[in-house]
Length: 274
Image (spheres, rainbow, N blue to C red):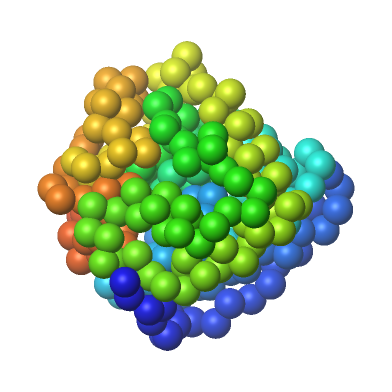
């Protein structure tokens, strides 16, 4: 199991957002590079630093913005897939200044899809990896209010094909946070609202280019989910990663970054010829 690497890609700044609950939410934003904006959205147990290896490789080609919302601290109407979507829209509309490519993992991919549906003017393209929204086998069905560290190690380990990539610091954080009743309940609520928000009937409305980056060994959002996204999205293509689970950006950061760079280059080419 790996330890967390030190951060090398910029400093996190706090951004104040107001969502449906009408209470201030402090989001962490890390921005590096210049050019077309790419906004990275994490999953339920994700952090900005989980994108770090990918961003290090992409930041010479684009403006990389990592948006970290305190998901397990959200309350009321903010604590739902709808609330997180609205908070993300507020950030994009009020702080970014131009349409972006949204890169979302798991719950973050689901949010990216919803943003593209609700505010297509804010989105130039989508990169979805292990995204929920169609098919998901969630670990929170059996989440415990005071989970043992051993149980968490097993469940978080299921996110990876190569479990040596799982980081000790992430396990420690999950154990610390999910031992708090309020945060465990927030995780269950967020997951349940996402599972109820099936997007199958609406995904065909998304016309921006989409890139699916998927692990062949993803057991959370299995390959069948990627196949269904590919079938329903009008302007999508897919890159499969072998020997890879639910978090390709952590298991195969170089290949992931190459895929995003190529996708953005195609968008830039289309913009120029258009």
